[in-house]
Image 1 (cartoon, helix red, strand yellow):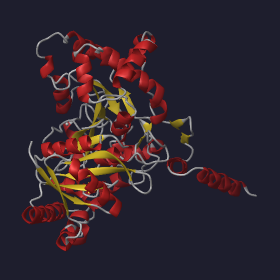
Image 2 (tube, helix red, strand yellow):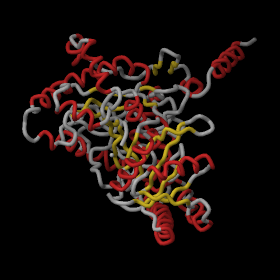
Image 3 (cartoon, helix red, strand yellow):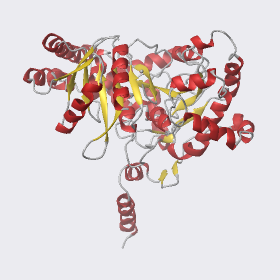
Amino acid sequence: MSKNNEKEKESSTAENETDGLETACYRQCHGQFCLTPTVNHFVHEIPLDFSPFLDSLANYTPTTYERIETLLKSDHSIDRVKSLILNKHIICKDLCLYYLKRIQMTNNYYKAIIELNPHLLSETQQIDEQINENNVNDKLLFGCVAAVKGNISVCDMYNDAGSYVLHENKMKDDASIIKKLRKQGCVILGRTNLSEWAYALSENIPSGFSAVGGQCLHPDDIREDISGSSSGSAAGIKLNLFTFSLGTETQGSILSPAIHTKHVCALKPSVNAWPKDNIIPINYDQDTCGPLAHDHHSRPIRVGYIIQSQEDLVILQSLSPLLPLTTLVDLNKDPVLAQLIIPILDPSRTCNVTFQDYLCYALGRDILLYLSAHSSSYSHEIISSIVEWNSSHSQYIPYGQLLFTQALQSKLTQEAYDKYRQTVKEGFQSFVEYLKSRYSIDCLLTVDNRDIFASTAVCGTPRATLTLDYYNPDHQQINVVAVGFSLGDDLLLFRLLQRLEKARL
C-alpha cells in the first residue's frame, strides 16, 4: 500500500471513530486540533492567565468552595446571588474565587472563557467595601459576576472577536453596556469564547470555535452542537462559571446557543434598547447585545403559538391552565398565515437577495466604520487589510475566511440591501397586523429547538427563549421561543417567560 493510501486509510479511520464535532474538526484543521474524552486543544489557542489570582486561589479553602457550592446548588439566579451578598452569607471576593476555581477545573476542556479580567479581585474588594452603604440595595446587580462575549470592549482587556488579527492591544475604555453593569454593582469576570468574528469569518467554522479561544464544547455532550455565536456565554452559564453573561446577536446568536444548551434563558432585546458602542459589529442596523442567565419572575397576555408536531401541541395545552392571565391561541390551521409567513422565513424568494449577500454587504460596510473609529487599538482599518493578514497567517484561520472574502468582493448595492430589509419588515408587519386584527394576539410563541423566526432580527423586535421540563420523542428537552411584535416588547416577553417558568416547576 502506498504512503498516500496509508494516510487516506488513517484519515478515514479517524473520521469514523466518532461522530459529530471531533470528526468535523479532524477533517478541517489538519492535525492542529485534538479532541479526546480528556483533551480539547487547538494548537494556537491562547491559555488563560491565572497569574493575578494564584495566591488567592492557593489560600481558598475547600470548605469555602463547598459552602458556596451548597448555597448556589438549587438557585444560581441573579436575585439569589444578590441576596446572598446583601445578607452577608458570602462576600463577592469568595464568590469570584469560587468561579475562578470552577474555571480552573473545567475551562481547559470546555473552553467557555477566552480571557480573565486581571483586575477582578480588586473590583470585588470595592464591592465588599460598599456592603454597608445605604444605597447598595438599589443596585440591581450588586455583587453579581458577569462574563461578556469576546467582541465587547472591556477596559484593559483585548477585544478581538476570537481572532488573531485583532489580538493586538488591550482596550482603553469600557463599552457603554459594561459601564452600565458596573454602575449597578456588577463585576466583570472576563470575556467568553465565541464563534470567531461572531460567525462572520467563514460559513465552515464550527460553532464555538475561535483561534484565540479554541473550541467551546457543549457542556452536556461534546458531540452536540453548542451553536453560536455566543457559545461561551451559554456554555459558561451551564457550567456555573459566572452569575450571568452578555452575548451579541445579529440574527440568532444569543437565542440559538441558549436553546441548544438547555436551562439557559436568553433575551434578544429590541434593537437600540441596549447600547452597542465599542462592540465589534456585523450589521449596525440589527446588532444588539443581550443577557443569558440561569432562568427568568400584571397584565393578561394573549399568546399565539405555532408548533411543528402533535407532541408540541399536547405540551402547550397542558401548560395553558397553569399560566395565570395568559391565553394561548392555536394559529397552526390558518391558511392565510401560511402565506404571510413566507417572506419572513425566506425573503430571498421575493427580493432575489440571499441572506449571505445581505450579511456580507453589511459586514464590509460596518467593520470599516468600527476599525476606523478604533484606529489606536488596531493596526488594520479596512477589511482588505484583514483578509491579506489572514492569508499570510493561514495557520490562525483553519476554516478559511470565505465570508470576509465575499464581503470584500460584494457587488450588492445599498438599494438591494434596503430592498431585503424592506421585504422582511413589510412581511412581518403584515403578519403581525393580521394576528392582531384576527386574534388580538400580543406576541407569538413557538415550540422548537430552532429559532425559526431569527430573520425577524431585521425588524429589531425582541425574542426570548426558555427550556421546559418536557421531552420530545427523540428525548430532547423542549424549548419555547417568544417573539415580540414591536420595539419595546422586551418586558412583555419577560413576563410571559416568567409565567412559563413558574408553570414548569
